[in-house]
Image 1 (cartoon, helix red, strand yellow):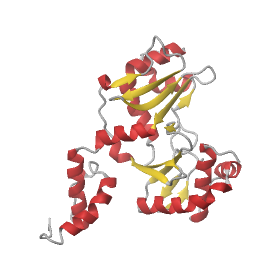
Image 2 (image 1 turned 180 degrees about the vertical axis):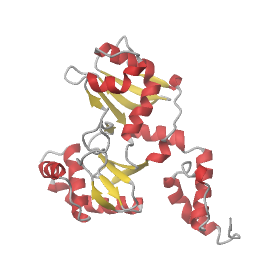
Image 3 (image 1 turned 45 degrees about the vertical axis):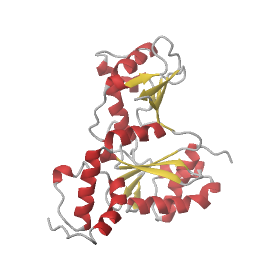
Image 4 (image 1 turned 30 degrees about the horizontal axis):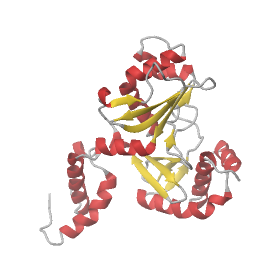
Length: 288
């Protein structure tokens, strides 16, 4: 059976539903059945176990292709609701690292206008105008694309299924970014951009942008570059310090200031917690 991102993603979701006795929507069941690939099963279940052990939570509801709460969306952008109350999306790759943000990642001129025409103060009518908006306003567009990439509280990106490689993106780690327009560059400028151009930030490739005859606009994040980009922006010295404080508070049951709760990195905290525990075996215990 041919292998692709769709059958991998749907097979993983179907197996999650099986493992946790979840009932998907009618439309999700249809898609799971149409795209199910039994060749994946042997590797899927160990991967599922690792993902939810890392999250520290289990799925309690499948929301794939269920009705959206947002009137501007047809279906829910999430795949699962976790026992912690958080939402979860599963994104997969078989042969590359390109991920399209849902809703706005690929669409026609109407979708582009809905989200980006304000930058031009007019309705966008052709492909040349789309290119001009992208070139001139990419620093304003990127936060919107990131919002739709990280709509769920947690996004699991399975980057290499055969190797069992995955990354967990926590939405609250990546809010309120500041983008410097001078740090963005394109491999093709307006003069030579015909169908495709690569977007870079600090010389790291973070997206591929395409304009084709049969699809007006397509934006795909280059996830391996994006992961470097996110780490550069979020895992600063301050973040490390805030996370160390959070780890100490959690280990000893201390209250953590509310204004700092969105400034720590859970991935770093998981690594720091055992170190903190061991360190305080030889130090006085904090009490406040």
